[in-house]
Image 1 (cartoon, one colour):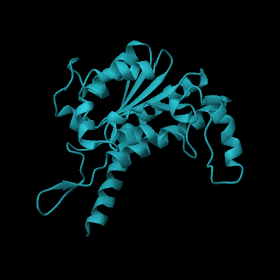
Image 2: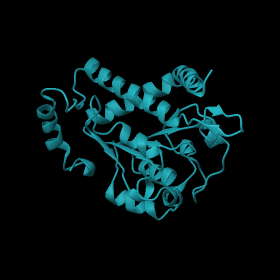
Image 3: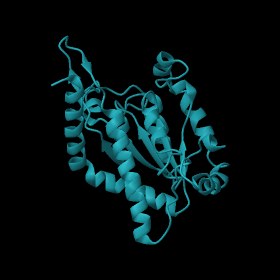
Image 4: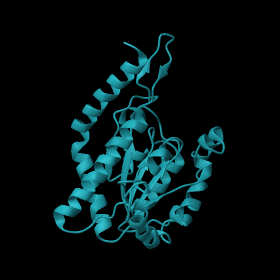
Length: 245
């Protein structure tokens, strides 16, 4: 079996295991998000390094929730200076800046994604969000996070700060294959994390329909009528969500 086939087989098995083990927590997350949206509050998403891909996964996309504000700071992302971003996520001084630009509060929900859940930005922003009355959903690897020590002044890891923990089932080091030379390759956290978040978003929409209210979702801009439909949502939320402005 080639590495391509092995990766897909391992990923499929992991998705099955995650669905079985995390169904209850995904339901709890969907209900928390639905309650947030129904009451007019905001869903914030946070991720550092490759975790910021998951912060963007549920932002402004076809079939995705409209009232989502990603917490974006180029110092924590990869496209400017990837190596430097690994250092910035460990610096606690960035957290007050993020809180000033993204003033999460009571009634809001934060989805924080970090495989290790040990670094300052991924821990201290959620801690303050929770202190302010927001619900915190952590998307992390319990195997990885449980095998490392905290790297922040609070002395805790992301899963220890959260109201709801979503375990992506990944192994320490986030790789699905061990090659002939002993190198571990084939990260799974993004693929599994994206599947979990999109499944939760689908359930949010379903909950809103069951309860008789509308959870606002974007349509594709590449289908007829999509631009017109989305324009109303962009007008409504453009002033509230910096990345939509």
